[in-house]
Amino acid sequence: MIEEIITSGRMNPEIDPILHVWGWEIPFYLFLGGISAGILIFSAYFTLRGRQDELPVAVKWMPIAVPFLIGIGLIALLLDLSHVLYAWQLFTNIRWESPMSWGAWTLLVITPLSMAWVATWLEDIFPNWDWKFDEVKAMINWLKNQRRYLAQILILLSIILGMYTGILLSAFNARPFWNTSILGPLFLTSGLSASAALVSFFSKSEVEKRLFTRIDIILIGIELFMIVHLFMGHLAGTQVHIQAAQMFLGGAFTVPFWIFVVGLGLILPVILEILELKHKFVPAIVPVVLIVGGNLMLRFIVVNAGQASRWLY
Amino acid sequence: MRYAMAVDTLKCVGCSDCVVACQTENNVPIGHCRDWIVEKTTGTYPKLQLEIRSERCNHCANAPCVRTCPTEASHYAQGGIVLVEESECIGCKACITSCPYDARFIHPEGYVDKCTFCIHRVEKGQEPACVAVCPTHCMTFGDLDDPNSEISRAMATRKWKSLIPEAGTDPKVFYLI
Picture 1 (tube, rainbow over the protein chains, first blue to last red):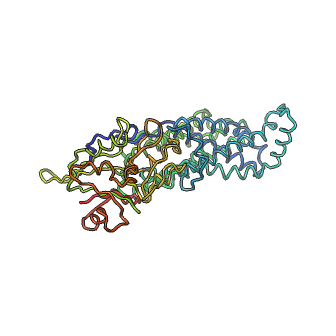
Picture 2: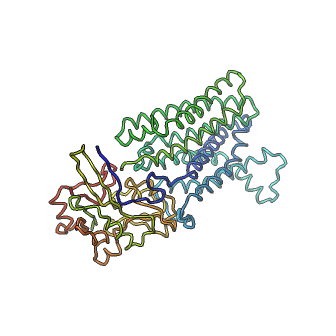
Picture 3: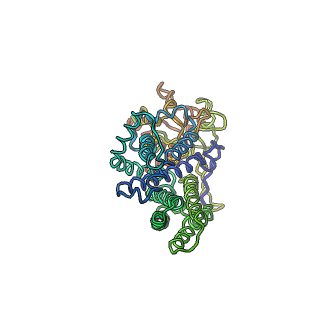
């Protein structure tokens, strides 16, 4: 028998008995950040490939949501800060060892760039759009000419945005469940998958719908592969990593994870998408709701499970 | 200078005097604590072994909290003591999740708080409050770089361990066993 207990009655709020300093705000932000990154990557990539007129929803329409999604995500982040009046301190330092620091700087750059990106498409989407002032018109025209550079920068920054949320968690070796480098690529892939599902849902064009359904099927396949590897890595790790994996293999997170994230969030929608491609009737709303819901659930479960996994006591 | 602390587990009786002394000295808000007592029981009845440890922030030389802090609020001060600068802390809690010892907490005023090795006393040449009040004198505080310091001698002559060194933190609180 080994029993290790704190006998002096340590009960620091949100630390004991199980760490829970990050509530709904962080996973909700990770979810919005992931989708924003996915949308921008598709939009910028297909612009570089010159397919903006063939894929209008992915390239021109979806990015409109991004500044709003990032804005809501930032509000969630600010709500999480317990010493929020000092939040400006984030921008007095660049700390390369802290993923949260370069995440903050990435957001500072990508938010205005995503707005500029949307601005370059508004006249395409709304023919009657009028920028009213000549200076603004001149600036938008200049931005339009820079679209290729803008797209390249956006792809790079969006990959950082999509990945850093996972890397942020994997940098905490104190929480064995997070301590796997696959979380970065997993979150990036799931963000891309949710945005591909949203594009195929909102698109009216058959070409665009089918292309993004196919992309989504591939992305979900990659996600499933990564989830298997996540557990393989943990199970081949140290005792604390094995214990972390066991929370999902019989422990408290087994049902929510395997049923809601893997079953309803990945496997069922991928079957529905395959049926869609075979021209079987599937209500379009079903796979997208399942995928986006599964995406949100994945982040909530990963954030909570990480906090529940530990080295001591 | 490398400050460190050694806790003699053969002398510690788990009276929690160190916990109360810390709360009084540092005006730790009610319901929170910067140090605590752990009792570890191993074996099978009736052959049981008990180890009692007074624990706190390990003032790690490779502190994950300092590494993950986005604002440099968590930093190394004199002698390797890990401190939080309240006016730079944004309350993001990255340091709390990165501490494998769960040694940090959120002060009711919003910033993150933890053991300071009573640096305000150490600067005046005094011992940390927990060390000063210990009725069994089980704790030693001092400079590891000084081979004649009490802690260096204790570490040289006694068997010791630190908590989860496999987490790569290089902790500076040692337990004499």
